[in-house]
Amino acid sequence: LGMCCQTGIKVWWTWEIEDVFRRVSKGDKGAMKSYGGKLKNEVNDLVREVRKDLGKLMRKKVNTQIIVDVHARDVVDKFIRDSIMDIREFAWESQLRYYWDKTIDDCVIRQCTGKIMYGYEYMGLNGRLVITPLTDRCYMTITTALSFRLGAAPAGPAGTGKTETTKDLAKALGTSCIVMNCGEGLDYQAMGTFFSGLCQCGAWGCFDEFNRITLEVLSVVSAQLKTIFNALTALLKRFQFEGREIGLIETCGFFITMNPGYAGRVELPDNLKAMFRPVTMIVPNLQQICEIMLYSEGFESARVLALKMVVLYKLAREQCSKQPHYDFALRALKSVLVMAGGLKRDPANEKLAENMVL
Image 1 (cartoon, rainbow, N blue to C red):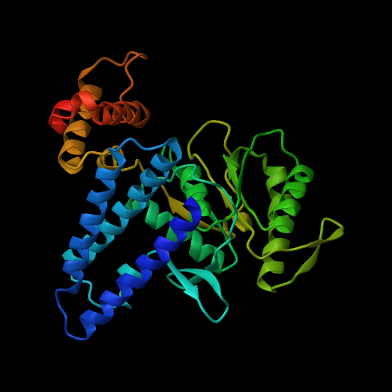
Image 2: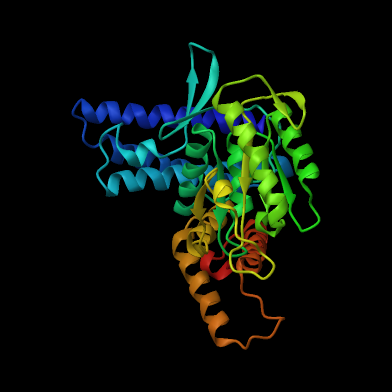
């Protein structure tokens, strides 16, 4: 039920925004501002809801909905700030837009020129990533690559969310995503078996640390992938792969993540590079992540508190010595915020101000 609600709410949000654009084109200039106010109230209602004594599953539903709703609110705030008044503006075209297409009676997701059918893969409510502008940019690269029948290659240092962003987009599109850690021990036969499995079940494959595979294997892998991408471009249902005929479901996708500059990594061959759209991932925006996590834990003044927490952790990281027991990274910050949420929901702290709880 959680996944159905999520998708239904996104379809409704897309329709509402496009309706606001229609009202603006008819002369109602304040339509976007009033809709922005409505979204803020909805987020605050959910924040108040999460403070109640909810069951574990219900809390997960509300938490996930807050993450999605805060992003929706931020998008509308950006439209108001930048005076986005037309449905054809890139700021709207570049968002993941969900539609229920009545002619085919199915859910369609559009982003820029890309059009992807919803996958209906059951995953339950296993949490969503906080959606930042960096995440949006990565989504855009991946969906555009899929529409051109190519792969995508997020690259960047460890801990920037390359694999997680790919998995999160798969969740948003209702598609299964299988992650595989690559190493020197992989040969072309193992890779071929993996590729043929992905083609036949229409799932996404995310190959972590792809540039750890040896150069000899990579040259064969590029030929295997070229065969698959050619079959996808030709819209074939069956094709010859590694000496046998296999089925091909067009929803399959191939993604590689790379950590540049580490020892033992190889440079990808040019013919393999050409098949993957590159996207550079950088260190995520801690303040935005912190703010949305505080919202989902039931704090209403999350924006001010997030700034305080991020500055505190930044100062602690700079001032404290570099001993291993000091950890001021995102993981440590998250555990503090979850604990603060538990304190906030405790009836004994009902009278305490939010900044005192944190």
